[in-house]
Image 1 (cartoon, rainbow, N blue to C red):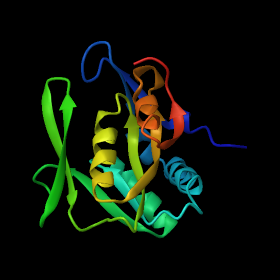
Image 2 (cartoon, rainbow, N blue to C red):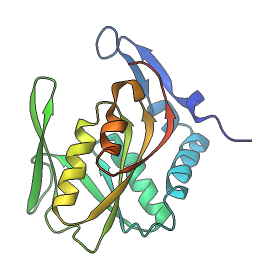
Image 3 (cartoon, one colour):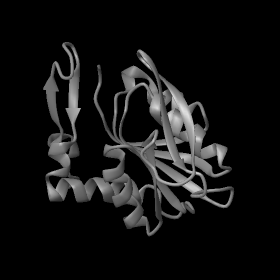
Image 4 (cartoon, one colour):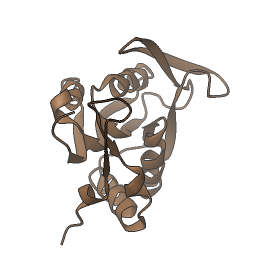
Amino acid sequence: MTMDLKSFVRTIPDYPKKGIMFRDITTLIENPEGFRESVERMASAHRGLGITHVAGIEARGFIFGAAVAISLGVGFVPVRKSGKLPGETIGQNYALEYGVDTIEIHADVVNENHRVLLVDDLIATGGTAIAALNLLRRTGARVDHAAFVIDLPDIGGSRALAALDVAIDCLMSFEGD
């Protein structure tokens, strides 16, 4: 019998603002069986693809991305907010609802010899994931797979990312916002 991972995700209405149904993965990662199953499903879907690195988007993408990297036996690339990484970095700006933000990676972490799996906990609008994809591709790395724990398909981020020639793998989806 397949474990129902969706049952481990808590929904918190009206957080962080009224009308939002927040999908909380902390209840999933607090459960050792649910967390282990999530990581193994994400890793299994990408075995044999020649993945050399997993890039996880700050902050919850670090949790799943690092675990998937360990399971695949590959390196982990933290995709961080601007100013958080030591050493030389490269950055990518992306639009927020009200303004612009920047994400960064170390400048020397991946190149044209690497194949990177992009990982995050959730894809909604896809803005951060697309920025991370563009940043990683600027290094010459091949990035044609992404994995998410949760997809909010009605918001359209997974479709936008797929339109950039990325195969999307999501463990679960929640309709609506």
